Length: 217
Length: 275
Image (tube, chains in turn cyan, blue):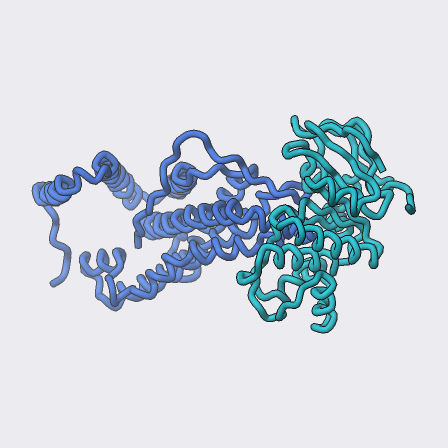
């Protein structure tokens, strides 16, 4: 297992009554899993990492620099997050796949590349198809392919498989983790599933009632 | 026939009788008290403004004319805040006030100086009724635009946050909802222009014809005032939506949707168009 310097450091972080973390380091390994019951603060913690939320007190650093020193939009382009719901934007599968690149002001690759990205997620979809006809699993994988296409430094995944059955969930996480590893994108993943966490993550951080129980990478 | 047929007080009371007769029919709709209040307010406000206008038209006075305009602006802004029950993010109220003032002052000024070319520019006979029409229509537009913007952002907060998570700027994540709100808010003005002269004769034109102006003059004024109304509504709503949607985000580009109000709120009412 390759262990590098942690990307994120949290010191004395409090957020409302949801999170109270005295010290935590994340992102030293390829895949970190945040495990814990509902309401334990997992999603809030992820949102703090790409500044969708700001802590009430304490500090969060990324690559040894306080998050407030980064332009929030630029930070989110390096630390991309995928929420629990696979959001579909207006337009076709192609539009949805490249919308992130459009947000970043980057040009879209050709259809061959896009089809390859879909195939890497185990998807075989017409690029001109409308996403309304896709299943929950297909939407989740399309959203993952979209996030990986951005080739971020870190990918924050908030239970991307929560709406999927067990077998599909394992397949989707496997595709995501392998795709991220190929492009040296580190993954910090929230999950309910002990199996998914132990199977794919090198480090598991357990949260309960907003506090870290154990495991700091 | 030249000149206008005066409506005597007794005949005016007959108009109230007509309204009260209709009210009797509508007594079980639950809107009775609201209609009564509206009738009463309309009567008192118009009588007061009638006396004020009479005084102003006889003795044109810049300070008093501007004061009347200011009161109209303040009343319009108060009405917008009162009639839109949705909670507002910090800064949006300031945007609404600035949009109303800039949009209406700009349009009224252009209308009086460039289109009508009246001397002095503050001649109350033109300034006050034209200002009132432009402010009233802008108020309707802003109320509608504000409601659509709030609902659009609230209902699409997951999508907006999803875009932010991917690294979208505030503009890329939410500007579409400002555009939709703008379109919805100017639609009544656009529809009014579509039906004008065919579906209905507008109030200002009817008034001028009744008071003895030639229909051609009345039409010229009506076209000019409709363009003025369109410009005022479009400008105020454009400013409000373009700057307003940004108020839903803080300095860290985080979406800040205010919590829904716990107190019961009145539904937004439709404002009567005044031309």
